[in-house]
Image 1 (cartoon, helix red, strand yellow):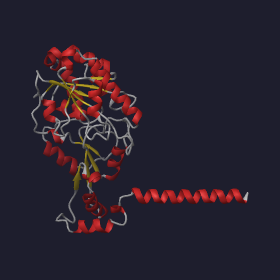
Image 2 (cartoon, one colour):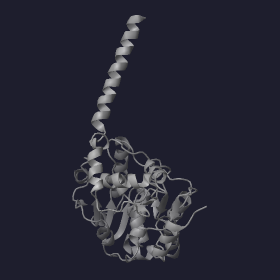
Image 3 (spheres, one colour):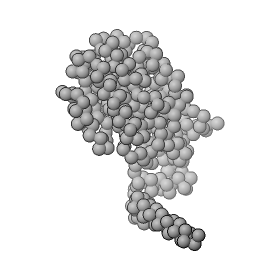
Image 4 (tube, one colour):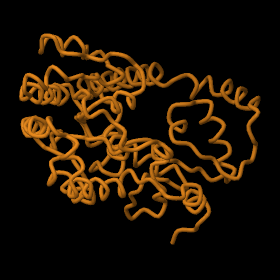
Length: 336
């Protein structure tokens, strides 16, 4: 018994040492022994020491200098406002990013949706304000934006979260392309997801389809969408919110078992499904493209299609009539 006890003790010691080594190697120095250096940088910033409020849509996550500055202000009672920075939020069954953003903020400004959380204020998709809508090329390309996720998950939510699921997701995209007519394929442009995360997307597409056009530039996506006759979204994120709010013809498809929707979002996606915008199977999406390709304009401007688009956008990519006024109300109004 004594021998077994000593063996177990040594195992636990070894595990503890291994855990300490892992933690010390994985936690950035700036959060531990380098935190003082970070604060010395923050102290020299020409930023206000006691602002009335702090607003950000992404710096709370990716800018350590901003976080160092904002953290001290928030501890002093300055309210933190976070604006929605893209899609998946508000529609996914769950996402740790959304939970975190709402938890740390005093007010969370969404693109139009609101659940039961008292912090949520639906101000609209501010990034789309002032842009021309309905501007696209009726003789343009079929633009498909591919989707991949990191091989090793660092965030959890209702999206592809493993190598296996990402491979299946890519297979669905290949199935969609195989279902296209030859003349449509010749007009197809594939935009790989950025960043690539070592998936070698251009090479994969070229291995699958000889002569396929792959746009590997890192330029803005909006010009490509506007140059297309039809935009195809393959994942639940930002790009189709952009195209729908800009009133650009859009087809969407993904596996609902990998990109699960929350119950409050399902009726809005169902409206898109009923008019042929949203699909759960790549083959159905390809058939719809073939059906409307020769006259996308006629399909897109049908009353039922536009009505479904408007209802969806009013919830998830709303363009406020008076954005400054609504933003002010969201910031200053007390929500019961």
